[in-house]
Length: 496
Image (cartoon, rainbow, N blue to C red; front, side, top):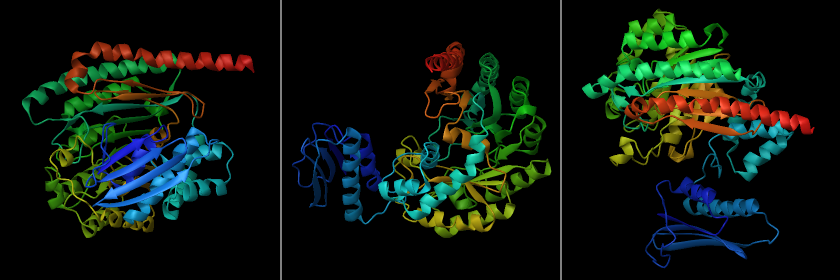
């Protein structure tokens, strides 16, 4: 299937509406021939007099056309074209996407923004149910999450920020993973880890300097990956000692360390994590099926996950997250339900349910092992078990390439929501990122829809180490951003 777009209003949004129904479709170039009756094509055409959409598949043709008002704005033309295309494809395929024609990754953000602008609840419902054609169930979930998040967001102060440290190493590469990470089993990677930790610790010191110069207040810390516990115990201790030296732990709301995989997370490392102040950890099974674990490239068993979890409890961890993925190759609805039941029986404070996303850099896609996964929606229906067990959805996001246009949802016991996840998803304050592949996201303090600026680190560990002087130089961008924000605020106040 090819996607053909013609006209000013036929762009990004129309392309992604087409991909709601044909995820693997390719965007055709300007030289694409449309007169081949055997070619499968979905097209959206914006003309000065009319808008036209059509689908040609298997030798059959479906089409719709509307006249265009000369008074329509470009935004109105874009929406009308996308809506016409959406309705055609929905009727022709029999598919009703759960989020309708919504292509954005942050549905909850729309509710927060509309409320801040003074919209009533009926207007918000109309936007989701009529404008976007979301299903009532998805809308109600998004609204419930927005209600839960509201006091968290209202408590944020303009100078708040969070700090993220990334460890781009893993014991093995999972088949669905597209993150930049190196497996620590080979000698060349092992030789990288020590110098990498050295550089990361220096970057954290530079981050602390920027925090102090800008008058920021660190609210949450997060060590993620990759797999942070793929570091040796001494390396992990060195990193966490540096975090404790750089940032006042007693002023934090939350401090998370991903201890995700039991094949590299032992009692000693769990004790180090606890000793150096982490208040929340992740132990991520993804599935409790040994067969599915083998299929995705995990080198541990479900029993290893259970043992790791019980060890974490024994050494004193009282806030644990567990991740599950719906739609893994070889899994079934019954198998996913058993994994969910097992996770619930352990009573972790958080359970995050991801829908499998097919990323171009993942082995699943590169090796053409992706399947249709027709029952992934039925897997997510099993999440009613979480509601029955007292968990509440507290954050939600979507990704391009997610199976059947579904979503990822974090569930928590009341009062145990992960604040970092809310902050980063709703973009309410800056996230200062350290490590290879890190992306610092600077958010204008105290301004809704203010300027957002990013500072990128080098993606690969070798490049990060070899060009570390440039990494440190780029950190000066944090101070420049906040200086500019203060200058702009002062000029605005002066005009008022």
